[in-house]
Length: 526
Image 1 (spheres, rainbow, N blue to C red):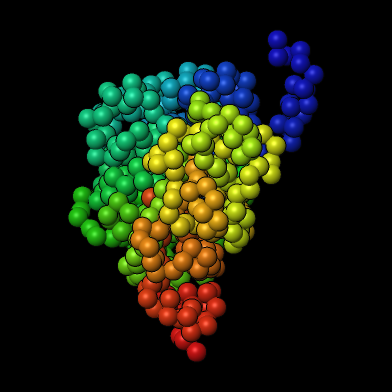
Image 2 (image 1 turned 135 degrees about the vertical axis):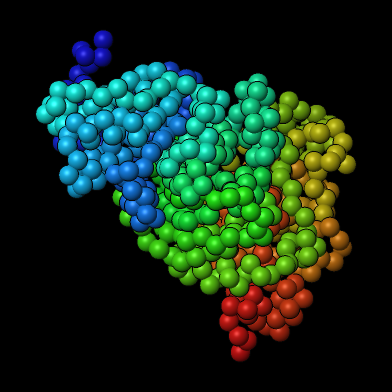
């Protein structure tokens, strides 16, 4: 029994020192952490901290939402992370109008709706709502029958489509299986690509629930802003909503328990469907305490392409200039591929050293490049033996001309980086000696390979490393990347300066960082 655990009194003591909303967050989170891990991940039980819910509701107030009259819904209500603070704000707004406690309870009963797959969380939500309105319940003796129901929102809210004033939601996020996606495919065909994330469908649902002029406030991962398989969702949002505000949460770690990710807080206003080439949105940086700092406005294209979102005030002007560039890596004579070797799945022979491979006459063994071989701005030489214990150096693919073998001059990049690192693009050139000695190499799955597609690319690999390491290029990539992985999709959309102008500027002796600023048009030459 949990009641006998020694940690319980300490937990209760901590709850007593917290605000009501913080305490409900920790109670809901404790239920999630006590649940079976597989079940928790299937239902994506990761709840929004009170600081962020309050910040998002403040944003809705600024956009003109009236907590004293409008109808609110959370289609993934979890532990009432939004329902309870909305109820408190409704109570405050109604009290300011002189509404009696009994009418206040009955109003909230009719104007607040929640839905979740987990029965226990639905019951917790009802209890938390009673706690939030305890004073009114005690005064009147009336216990509301709150509209919090156990159901699958993606399939059971058809009657509410187009009727809701305000939807507030932290949708569940995880990859969907083929079997659960199949019955939803027709309903959500306009946003589904490949194997979508669950929260993609929830965003579409939240928009469809709104009446024209209604607003949705969403707490989600940032991956929908740039991910390759969210392109249809981005088009859907531009066609059907005015994107009023995007808040980029600055604290990546610690926002959600057991999750490390970047978070966006987005306010959308439902509009009649329109064909638009682009829209403009206000952007803020949001602290972990829920404080918003405006950084300006940005333009979002309606082509399925990434949405460049400024992360600082300085990024706004940078994006205005850089996004005008039509030049990409392909214009420099390079293409992007991801290392094909997955070390813990591949069953082909592997060797710690070249000597080991020769001993068994593995004549088709090729050297393997790991992410840790890549030193920022350096040159990768691939010694005969890995410098790290447990990382084999050679793999026998059975054919030196296997499609996984890289044989062209190239640059390699660490695939997993994050916005809290000094550089997002951690890149190095591959030494020509690797090709002379071994004929090529294999990239491990956490290595991005940017290889030349002609004998004479605009810049040789060593110069391309300097370009991709330039401050302005790194800042621009941060503005178009919404995930920890450096994806080929994002790299292929990375705006770069005019290749001929940049090559000429560098040939004239201009340092690469300055040459990038000049050829991007961020500063004038000389």
